[in-house]
Length: 176
Image (tube, rainbow, N blue to C red; front, side, top):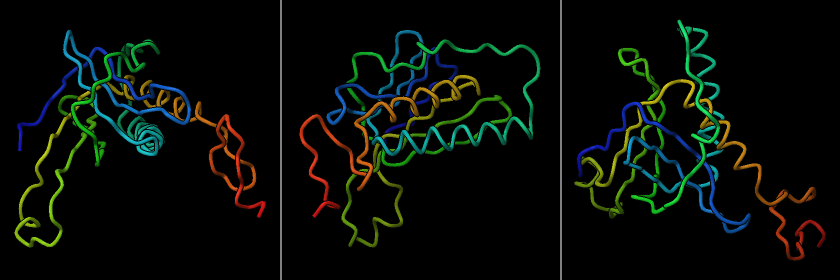
């Protein structure tokens, strides 16, 4: 397994989509100086991360309020930027807090494909990339809001079946 990629104090933290609704790709991105980490994720992962991150931050703020001035990042810092060539596709996203650093941790993991029948493979750490981003609470809050907004900017849902409707005619299974 490669060494974990760690981004401490990123200049920008983004969750969003690139492309037209119905053909979008979703990414989580961290930028620091000239370095950029881009990870491909699913739309549902962005929606869950946004919801859980905001709830996590609310609990964290109640238990351990921030003290002093807090820099609020610009919404443009939470926009996915080109190039969007992902290093890997995240299958697992974790969220935590490091009280020593006073940073929220977002961990993105890629598991390599393995044969589920191999009992020895169950005892080993899975291969693949691991990336950890240590960001401020405000960066995570702005990223989560931008990610939630990107999810809602997709195709509208059919009021009958809940499936996304595209620009072409929607054939609703509930009308059969």
